Image 1 (cartoon, helix red, strand yellow):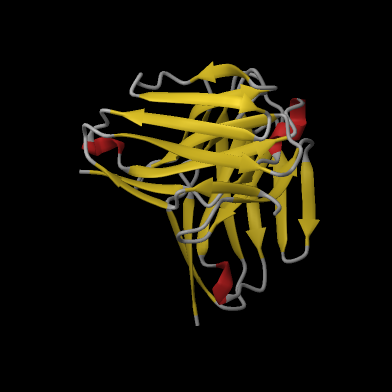
Image 2: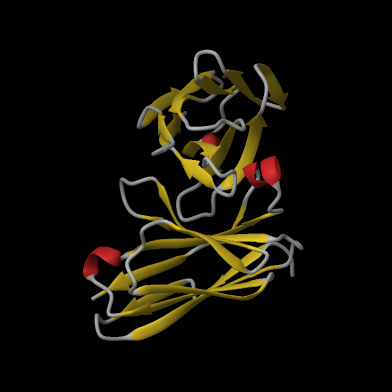
Length: 110
Length: 115
């Protein structure tokens, strides 16, 4: 089956850079996705890496190394509104649905 | 209306009650999902529907019964639940084709409390 490991909590200050790591073990691999969930809100899609390397979308970047079964989400110029939970996710073996990590709670302080 | 809409947003039910959660998507997607999110636990996949057919049941107890009457609507029928079933139930949809499933769109969820 699929399993993902990510840190449970990360804290940072406004303007800083933070990296949230994710390691995975999968039967079949289609790529690594990242989602953001604010307290009381719905998870929302941030990024998807199918190939090795860095994908940049504004202040957020995501990296994948398939040989290391490892990826990370990089958040730059942190803002208070970035305080949320961040989940890495992979498709199940059949490719029909996402399996999520336990999530990393990011707290940004001023 | 756009996106994925879930009703009700909050639900309190007794262990002997029967209730249903509703999900509707206006994105033209072919796949729909139910996830359970408990405190300190990851999003747990419960059911997967693709083109209105159930393609996955993730060892969910029979007191949870899904129904997908068409590609836009998904229900979760609940009966004789236990207090440990209290959680946030999230519905999601995706295009339903290979790697297109990596981008799922979630509803706001139903916060269920079983008393």
